[in-house]
View 1: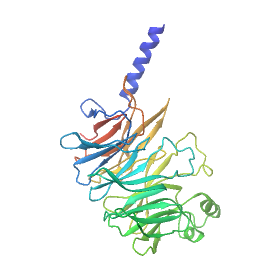
View 2 (view 1 turned 30 degrees about the horizontal axis):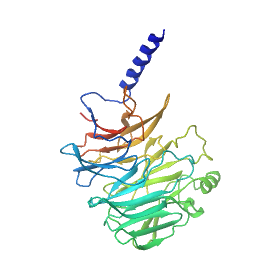
View 3 (view 1 turned 180 degrees about the vertical axis):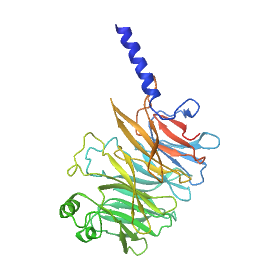
View 4 (view 1 turned 90 degrees about the vertical axis):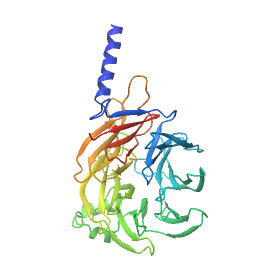
Length: 376
């Protein structure tokens, strides 16, 4: 009986793995072991497409040469127990590191974290700001923008001096700057005036009351004068993160419902990523769903696809990456980071990056990396 149960468990394990990724096979899935012992936390492609930075729990950052397909060098950092999120500066000289946490138990609130600017050549931290909700490097590579409490500040990366700042009323969790550096978007609590200009709720007294208490808006500002330009033309739930598309035409915005407004089950936020026009604030009907509390999301280098990390809550929580057609929002493939016998590939969070060939995604695969050729 015991032997039969062991055989059954082994068979089920193999079957579960085989079902874990749509389109996965030995031909289009390659595991890269770069002698790392910690869970991969983030993967980011350099602006020139030649190098991928791989962040890990414990703070090690590995730099993988895309053409040679091997690690060129690595940098050891202090802290970052659960690893950093990574973002390259536009000139490829700096990496923005944002601290990850194992989880955030206060689902309705953003947990402030550490943001640091790393000089890749020297391996030194040039600027460090703690307890910030959101951070970004300006496109001119000169400043770090942070949102702390209700204050948006511009810090000179080399000197550390706060050069300028402004206080958007009711600022919440997120700030983003356009690729040209001319527009800043801030998540804020709505005012009654804001809601009068949002078609979906302006004539609904109950919806207005709920929005003032539980929901948020995205406000666009001139990055030089801080003059208010316009507000996105729809209401959002709690906006936890956002960033501009590569061409600057759109803002991707991750938001999730306030549990006090819409109770949900489990520890995930069960949110969604929406697209807002950067020219006039028009909110697209295209929505990308995610079950991740703090998803990583980005578009492919050719602008054809969009992908987001998520989680699958089955017999246990499994990390996943969902691949969408960018224009329609239709999910076409799904990689679930399940397990193979003897491999701890389900640890850590999901992470990914599109490769320059437009048909391959690099995936965090436990302490390893995997190359998934999603398009034949």
